[in-house]
Image (cartoon, rainbow, N blue to C red; front, top):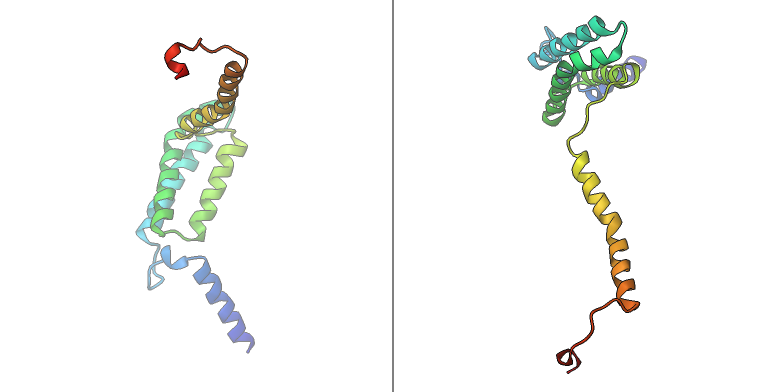
Length: 149
């Protein structure tokens, strides 16, 4: 009974971690996706090590391309469901290094339209109430005889 419970728990852990996405069917080697991710991760971490001494702005500038490539690869793997828990853990660690330890950031492209639309929506009620206030307080054009009909 104990062996069965242990086996069931390990099998459940294996399936929830999506380990089949990182190891070949015969458990002989890593999948090509996993090997490519590890190579890209190694390139990024090597860049981090090279520039981590001293000013981190140099690291942010010089490692931005490799970090962006790794991030895009991770996004594609996430979209295609070809990653396992090891890839997620490695990416979490790398993102923590990038943002918390080195204080680097990658600006998002969608922030400008969001700010523009939000600003417009914020000022829309102000414009509405100002136009009604001016209309109410007699700042309107005089009516002609045609308007009175």
